Length: 360
Ligand SMILES: *Cc1c(COP(=O)(O)O)cnc(C)c1O
Image (cartoon, rainbow, N blue to C red; front, top):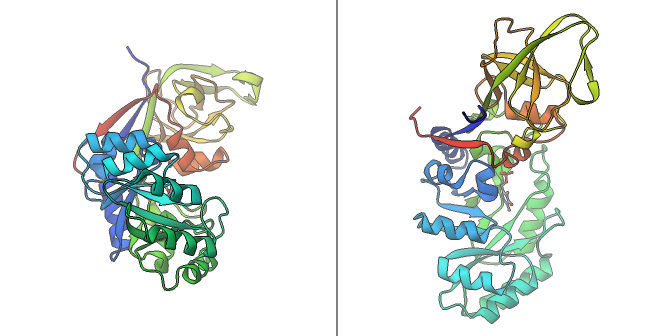
């Protein structure tokens, strides 16, 4: 028998979350962001869940090829653009749109002389200071690209550093406006947080990622509160149950010690499955549908749950790590000092990924 841990991805939840994007940004077209293996959910599920999206956006050129081979016909946007000149040739062959954030990416388009013009998304640095041109650089790149036969439509894009904070995108929007004033082309600014909370950023195309997977882009607002449904359910089972006597500890480093007799369950899930090792004692977990907490350190293949609230639980009982309706991935992330994004993306290859195609 295989280990009992598995992740189930709900196509219906992904569709629901995409519909939520449409309702929030009715005037915009939607790039569904599927980088990092669709935030750990798998491209197979993403192709079904986001069939109604206007385009897919990612950063991996091999995966863009896989999307074309799987039959995706609509636009594909490469969010970091080309990494070398050969990527420009692939973009022409596979009809990929490219972000352009560096002068050398303009050089590659010029040198590659693609047979088919490539749609380009010129990136403005609105304060993240990671990728993108300043205003002068943007206008220069725009002028150069406008004269190239290999360049198709030129769009203007930016990515927010602080759209999850109230008013956090205002300065970035203003600087984007100044930098792009008078330039023709479609605009794309909004990530998930801006889709939900920054209406003036919606424009021609929005670029939601995390919300499509049913987690929250905000530290202080739950996914359910944003009208989202979790797309990934991570479950496993108890593989052993024991009673700790008062004074006995559990796990590496003996970081948790019982102060009275306690029943505890050993769960077949550890950091080698993608569960965060930094999740401390008290991280929420559900056993047989009842909410309880983890105890002691997470190890490679196992962690331990307090069975106080579920005295009837035996070895074999089902355990929800997140996404099953009792434990929110964002709660586990917050307890471990990280964000839902990281937990989804870190789901390990050894965890069986199932696609649930049931209608809601
Ligand atoms: C990842 C990414 C997004 C999606 O961000 P979320 O916070 O997951 O919605 C949007 N735009 C760019 C450029 C990205 O890299």
